[in-house]
Image 1: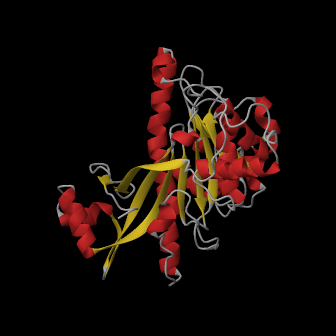
Image 2: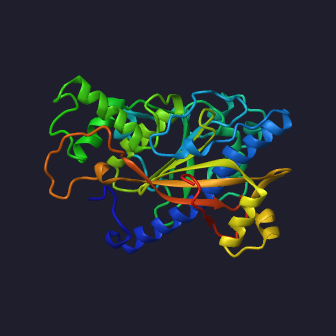
Length: 353
């Protein structure tokens, strides 16, 4: 059973809102890739340091990622909600009057250029200068919140409503809610002992494509994603990490990772041939950088829950088997560069090759 309402269950006005949200999310995807991956890559190039490319093994479910922080890599956390987060959620998602995106509040951040030129229209996603606002605010601590403007009743408008948003929902509570839905427990997380509860918490991280040792924004991202499931609308959480060197996008259907990877010239020729694409067009529209031994591409990998991570069809209580994987790879693609509109993602079978 889905926690959100599908299009078929929505009124015509809410279907229109869903369409607009998904259109804006497509654009936000582009901005997030640009900031998390392209800007990070340029930081390393300008600093004359080798970029820490992700290896294929790190994209497999249950993979262990080296816990090394790279300061030149962009890190951020963004929540994008289809509707409005109610005030009752403020206990665990901390957004208040002092962190609303007003000019006076933003001046406390002492940003280099934003406060002097900021006006209220800039915080709307439809604004031509919104990417500049986003770029200024992404590096700050905690999270950014984008949601529907409650004042726009007849016209759906989405705004970056709050900055410095803290996520305080407990990991144990998040794991408990997921385990209840999947029928691994009947009442509470510790009903079968501490070892069982510890295994369930590890599986909670795995469900969202994270290592149980993930810290900081990554843990906040999956806890936020789980807590936002209490809403009847859809939401999307973006997290850029300087440890796994990529962008993670947690939506209503699956978790996806986007990273930079290198391909040899022979591999690029093979990818172009398999997708019926001219090599020159591949280089122009898909390569972030061309190197002597190949090129740099944006790789997209989507993960779907396995049978062990879906509610059982009979609804009966079951026992956790930690050895079973909770994720499977459902999609592998090479994405066109941000801003390229005429070329689609290219299908690849790369992670296990």
